[in-house]
Image 1 (cartoon, rainbow, N blue to C red):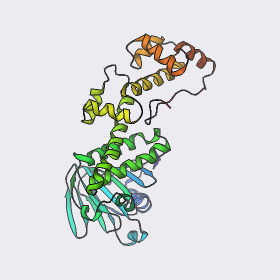
Image 2: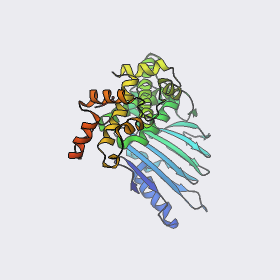
Image 3: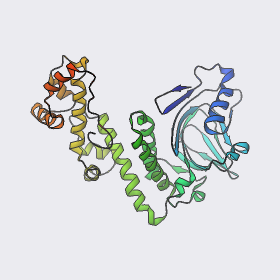
Image 4: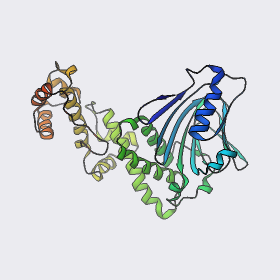
Length: 339
């Protein structure tokens, strides 16, 4: 077991002797982390790799493993944990079992299980899965019927569930760089998207959609912009195609957030330029080269924007940083263009 970052924990059998792997997994992953029984397939060398993110009211688990059966029953049900469990089969063959039913989860299908009921996830081939756990009371606060959704296979590639899948993946990839306040808000977004995926009451559906889907799409748009800000061809239409929405919808997402697409993108590029100007490794780079490297196509526009943002010219910032390398630099946040 090793720390992936401040919030991600990674489990792997890679450095565990083969005869000890099943016992280790049963104790640390099964008994401690998920409160489940674990049994690998007999006569096969067991291998597994898991990454887990645990937040208040939310647990995410990305797992790859050889064939095994994971079940929750008996003594584990006595712990009183009543979670809604969303299990997604990303790769390979798997089955879910609960309430006397057995259903195959094909690749790209998901199912809802109840942590308060006896259930099992049985992988019969090498494969990968993604599991989300959230307290049932949090999901039912949105007036959804969990009972109606149990053991109902759902395709992941459509609707709110597709967006939930992307958003949860973004959280797993980015959690180490997100502040605690935004992470807490993200739990609320996951709650909304999970409720929409299951099916909220009709009178709440539009409110949930407006709050959950819009917020999730904005975070995805900002994350994509930060990762690709150096592309000088970055445009609203690029983000719109990525999210499968109209360019005007993307513009509205940023406007509702109190900024604009152009202002956010400019803020990201300026913050990157500021960091480069203060980095000794880039001390020999011309300011024009830095401007073009971060995505600006016009040096005069870069200089004007930089001075408006920081109150100093790029050359002045480089001089100040040269005298005090430890001074703080601007940081771009997913909640706004620059903090």
